[in-house]
Length: 448
Figure 1 (cartoon, helix red, strand yellow):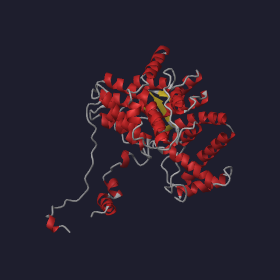
Figure 2 (cartoon, rainbow, N blue to C red):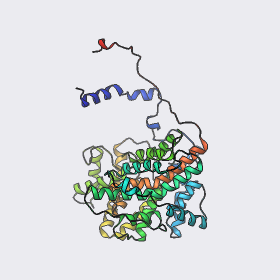
Figure 3 (cartoon, helix red, strand yellow):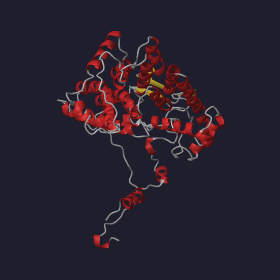
Figure 4 (cartoon, helix red, strand yellow):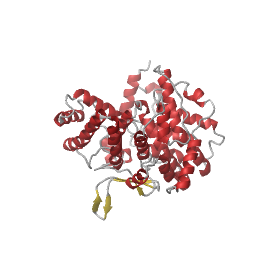
């Protein structure tokens, strides 16, 4: 009888490729250069990320930059925050349609999203409440594919129809995610279940908090901080794994539901969307193993143990540190931590102390990584470093951490899908070089 472990070992042996072969044939592992910069695979108007700006041979900016439709993310955020508006719907409009909405257009768009916040009749009972899973990302993907069965024109990839489908998915992603968690929490963990239908006049962040909490109550600071998380996670260039997946699957000519389900599968991976959970778990382990969280020497020793694979999950990674593109700073993290601090102050002294611990690790970790590892660019905290802490303060269960990312990123995926359909009519098909030696076929009686 075939042994699974032995078969797996055969796979490891036969599929292994020497690292030198990648260098010999100048093949970029992960489609990335040695310094982490992605191989150019396409063009986009939707967003831009820069580790630095070059003027000839001179570096004129060493800080990370992010632009949505050409607008610097700091300027964009300051715009709606200065007028005490929540920004998710406004920025969604910008990414989908390429321009900032007028006051009337924004009001109309918010109404449109609010009215589309509805699921097919009995969908919650027949799809979400049946076979609930602890993995809410799988539940969202299953729900998205099932929604295709309710659509009268699921395979119509005209821009009008894809836009219609995208707007509906943007509106109902929060419902699918939160309702899926409540079903799991009730049927698997035995807790109470409540299905709140959010008022259509609420923003997306307010709707999430309303559906999540038994009393439906939240403060403005809570809503603003969650809204900021959604805005900053909404889009990040065409080269991130899930957006590239969206582009690749779209190029095959398939439907919106299949495309978004594929993107969800990508985002679910711990190397992409699941990093914020790892940060939270790492920080809990730090507090359990450091006797004095005010002692920077103790914190430093713990972080060194992580790098030496002696602490936490023994993978040698300080989670939430570093980014494939950004070096000196992740502009999303720089913006977000201002609102993290505000929320921590509102939550009280314990949360403020926790925030101060995060700030210590944020400062010490890049120093330690640079001392002990060969790095080709700077290292700084990324947005995942703070987002798990925010979700904890908002009483979001860990099962919803990555789904919050999906609720935001569905906007970026939709914009890239539409852009791909408009501009590129070729299926994406990269090349792989075969490096195996030629072998002759052996008769079965001659095989050992």
